[in-house]
Image (cartoon, rainbow, N blue to C red; front, side, top):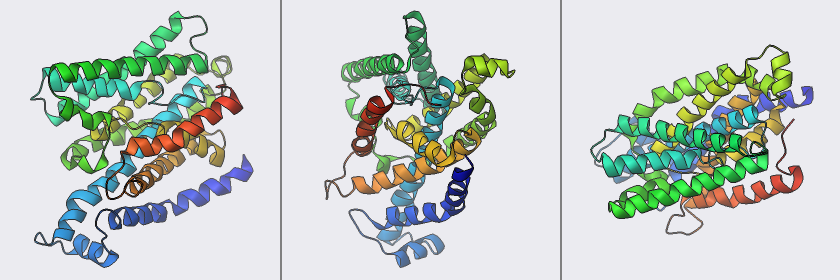
Length: 335
């Protein structure tokens, strides 16, 4: 692991510069090109009468900040899930967690259409928790259900079922247009006010995730080894699950379903840092934000002048990576 520490340190020291450059690229490029001078003027001397300033402050800046945050939330959630289950295929999208959040939001919009933004966030949390309980509950009842591949299959089945039920509900209540945002995530429609409400939850979730980094590192050795080292495995798994629920719920409430970020990024972070989750979690958070923000930039050019849904772009990277894991690791447990 010693030969990987310099790579981790170099990356984390350069992270502010990488984030700044990513934000600059995201704000500059789109249907309308905006130069760096205009961006500086908008940030320092905002003019409400300038169309470019309006685009920067009310569209592109919230968009890139949201992409950075959501990418971080999903990547940290994926890292925690892979660590506590020792499952290389674990991620919020594959385990049906994002589908559970979107399902809860669909119910909320159908049955409680006047819900506040805070209530939407809380319902999203409830949906995440429901799907996790459902997937792991079903897995515990089946022979070999907790094996990595079978758990991924169960998660996919549950996610597909919840998505189908959500579609039926949206058609029956005639809210298909409203919920399409959560199933075809588009970062340019993000609500800045909702983002402000979500930040306190996110800060608590990320801080708690880092607090769990050492116990999750021990847990990744296996339940028997962790118990032998005095680890309270059930308590750690419950706490890590609560973090996943909060972070995934926030991500879905802000921008809808975005897949594969939580699958790809933790593996890259683990390659860069080794097996210590005190390094994996912050590295995954930064990588996840950069990855999603750059995917969002790419989405603007793949089908120009129209935008490609961000989920399609992440799937372009995620599906081959998923198949690679199946082929090379057999869906097995990571070390």
